[in-house]
Image (cartoon, rainbow, N blue to C red; front, side, top):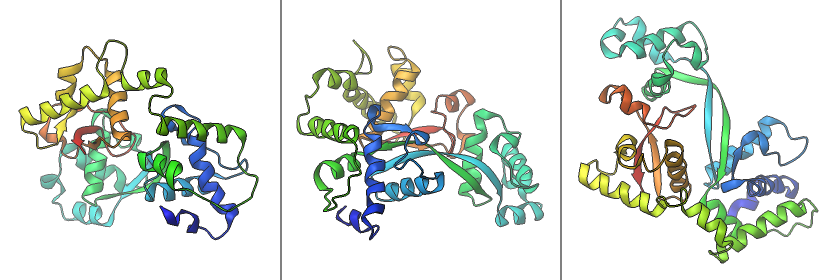
Length: 286
């Protein structure tokens, strides 16, 4: 991360990247809607998003995206013209491919049911049959690498008066939390447990490990198995939040479903809906 300050030669540009990270510190779990992150008062959306992309490329943040427009790709046109589409695609895939052949459309205009839509889009994207024309960032969060960078690596010789007291306070809070893990104790208690008298994130991780071993899923555990085991005592929302926390702390990775034909509608429904990339369906331990 030592080359962070070399991304731009101008200190005024460097401060925008830093302020983007510091803005995230003001939100719970260092996660917020991209619309709430404004490094500079007059910064336009395209510049803000470019900063987010570059921070993501360096592992300092992660984000979710929403596909707003898709279109057929040249390979998809060739497949339709060859008359082989009906035999090589599912009914939903063929329907979506034909819809995009009429021009760029929003996912909701494909005519595919919401339950399957994202998985079908992901499948066709992976095959190179359709392409993303437009997309937007939704939620963004600071990664463990980003926290380490702020706490241990970032330095600057700039004397620019760009950082507010609120940003400084949030930064000091991050430092205290990382240097003194028990500070504040009440905050740690809340974050380590899904809710009072329920499972800790560590215990949920242990259940994931045991299920993967017992079911022989080779570190690719479908989420519906975990829901069957833990709902109750946890609610669906509580379990989803716990999985997001484990992912943000780099203890698991959540992967989307690529082949919908291998699972029932109920099993697919157990995944975590996303605006891009299909439902998060598999749990992979890091």
